[in-house]
Image 1 (tube, one colour):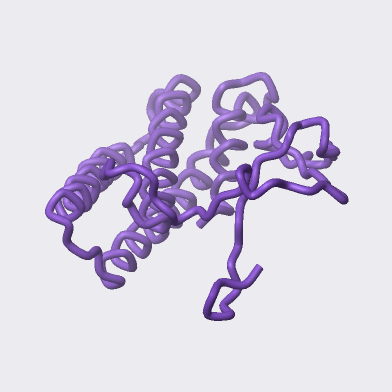
Image 2 (cartoon, rainbow, N blue to C red):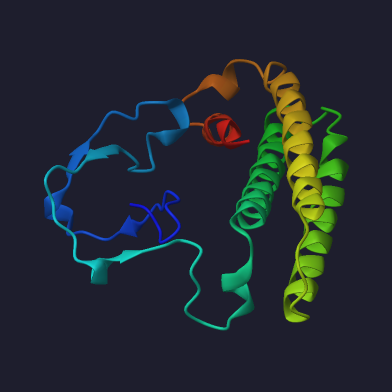
Length: 185
């Protein structure tokens, strides 16, 4: 679709599940338990009443005004931090004497994520603009941190031995979930 200025406009839509074909082809390690699959929709007419533009706001709620990039970055960041923290807890159960100094890094990063969230909330409450520089700062911090945590998790994982490779172990599932999600950054 094009808007009134001729620019491409992407609309999201809602259809009945019986109008979509689910294609169960996501077999990657961390996606097995999610029920996330590809889908195909063909020749379905959708009334305008069932379509929407992502960035149009229908409420005055501050949460609805968070730029998508910041929303995605901070949401993903706290999920990675949670998985990294859980990985650390499970790794210690397998190898109690591992030096997991990165646990401190996780705690510090959570404080920084909360600081970012509070700053964004303050800007939105004051109806101030969230600059591209701020959005880039949050994105760069998040992606650099996840990259660093990923390397540290890999280094720890290889030290955990055969127990960590058991498909029914908690540390294995966390490892799979983390590195499936790692593709998002």
